[in-house]
Image (tube, rainbow, N blue to C red; front, side):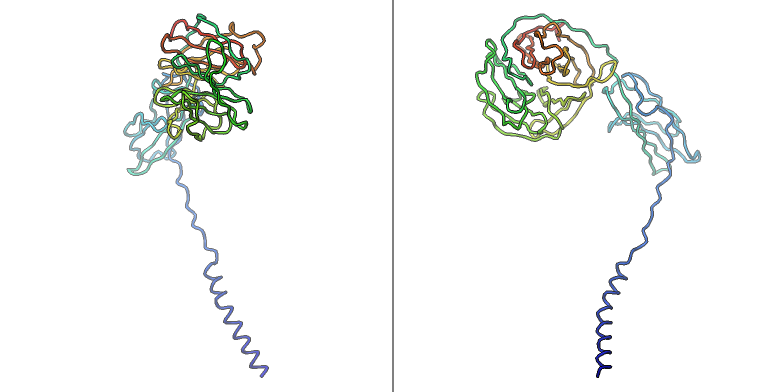
Length: 366
């Protein structure tokens, strides 16, 4: 009886182990198939990575074949995603002209087509300087007005006799309609203490306002300042804001300006801002005036005039002599605030916590 019980136990154990053993066999590690990378056929010889050129320069792109017996069908050049040129066969070298390029960091992609159906891509990073020496602008002061010296000015917009002003700092940020003659707000809305107000723009009778690091913006009725909606954006920091009439243009404290679709606040384009010597960093408050963008450079006493199509700096105007006493080298009282009156071509400028607002005329006019 004991023997029968022992045999029955073995049979029961065997029945249990069968599916387990089957499972182990089923899920045993399989040998991975290793796909070898296709060897590189082409090697770029020039230009060097991150080579600095000037807009308009012709760049020599030369290459060699690691295997000279490979038949080359053609070679093509792209700037970013834009096709530029192609040459049939194996020229060994070809030239890309940068005349129509934007300034700043750009990527040239060289596509090699070979053996009828194969292709190989190589990228070249270049830095393109402007070929224009910025024109020096002077100015004429038309009038001076009082300005709230407690207003940490971040954005300024003029519209039919009204001056709109955005102020910053957590707990002190606001949007205002300011009486130019007195500097006092006629209407004002305060932002939640968690928001640091930044640039503003008037687009289709609505005021758009961005914030510093929270990646949240607001849209207001331009007459009542009643908030219509809020929006989010992916740009890391908000600094300045303006409009070219079709898009909003935004700065983030770098050398870049972003062109934004205003309904969903999605980026459609960007430019880097360079002059003939290099990058212009710390772009702050911006204003679109007669086809050009004027920008404060944070901590500097001048504004730059930018071609929005290429990013080239076309001109500079220095306002050091208008800096109120005690504001020079004070980063809490920097030049910041540009508003344009299209009726007479004059520009309003001020700064953070300045006691004065200037109405000026640039000479020569832009």
